[in-house]
Length: 106
Image (cartoon, rainbow, N blue to C red; front, side, top):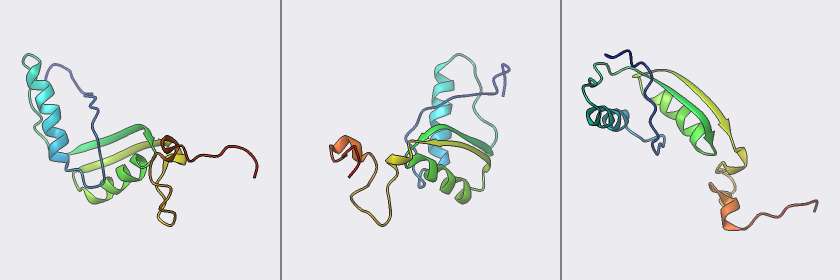
């Protein structure tokens, strides 16, 4: 890339089915809005997820496995209590927001 720009942060809603072309398109749109920054010339990418809350952590790992253009992944998960669980349908995503959390010793 030109202008010495090697790092380009982007906040985007991502699932395991997200197409990387869509994310790269969002980055290109950001760059075209700023002066003369060039568009990406490569299809390869590195995915970095810091504070991949809840279901985002496994989604990024699934995407890494499924997408050949991802050369590597660095995912720092958190908020494990917000993970959806396969065998407990009542615990899908942010269950705390639904007010069904009991705190204390049974």
